[in-house]
Amino acid sequence: MTITHYSFGKIVVNGNEYTADLIVFPDSVFPSWWRKQGHSLCMEDLAEVFKRDIDILIVGTGTYEKMVVPESLIDELRSKGIETFVSDTEKAISLFNQFLQEGKKVAGAFHLTC
Image (cartoon, rainbow, N blue to C red; front, top):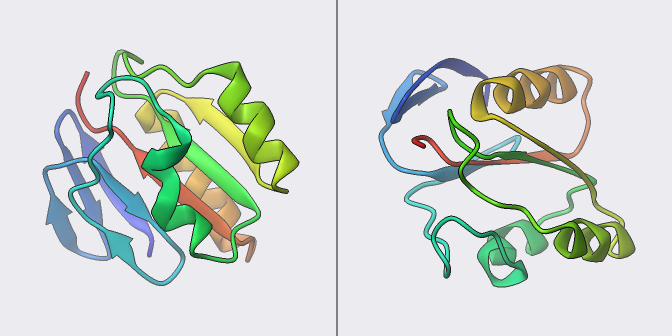
């Protein structure tokens, strides 16, 4: 599931273009990812991640990093054995692709706009 392109509001995963926030797994895409509180990430928003055997979660917070990831959420993920990396979406995609190439069990939750 290599991500080959990202620009504000658009991402290309394995040749397929998406224009809404999404979660990318090593073998599939969960499209049209909707968050309960919009620009603030909470555990409920990651239900699809918890259904998978994932060790690393990469969170792309948008081009201007408007999506907030509370430190308490990162701590809770750590307690579940999930290492979490948070950055603007462009950097997050690069990190996702790197971990994927290394064969890591990684998921990427990407906010595509602000």
